[in-house]
Length: 290
Image (tube, rainbow, N blue to C red; front, side, top):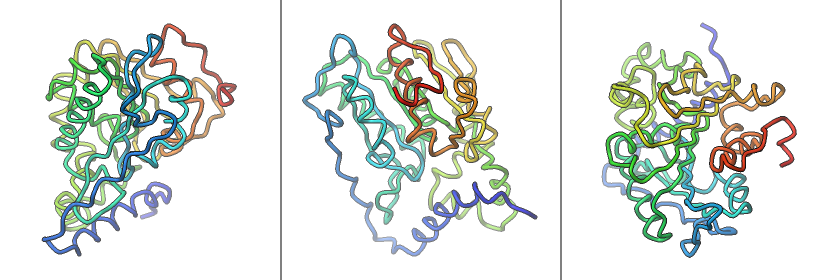
């Protein structure tokens, strides 16, 4: 059987991490969260939202990401435009530093809930906007739907989210082909198997509809995504949803899963439009220099 190499290469670090966890003694404690970065207003708790940008923006990293590395390009992009920007770590697993988003997604949503409350208390704002990549664009929906987040979030903007699960370009089939693989990975890094298409977590999340009233949703996907597959499974159905295919904005943009959520300035421009629709300008291939 010929396996698609690019998604397999992306999965290998996760499998290596799972094996690492298996070798860690049960007495190991969770790795401390990475120190929050302050850079031009990023995670600056003295930042007060302006009249032009009245809501803080919370950045929610993807699987194997963290509050710093996922946002080295995008956080400064927003702070330079006058936003109060905050990022956080979630889904930590004992014995694994820096690579997060591996714990149970329900628990991760609780970490988001606590962080939103922290940001609202510091800034005095009534609501936040959440921008997430991959798992970080899907997981907040659990917070919105089950943990009271809809009263505190104005909009959820998701880049390449695993909204309805992923086949990982067909590689998730290996979970059931390789004896014990699903149980082993689920036991060690449940944040991975929670995102597999057809998981119990996703069934609960999507039961009764993708959205909740009062929240604006934007999903940005790339047809070249090799991780959150098939790419159309990223899109949401419901009122107040904008599903955006990156190649409809710029047909020659070849960004795949990671690039779409970390460095693509055409995506950044479209997110800025979603955060401030009253001042939106057309997103095109030329937006890369914006």
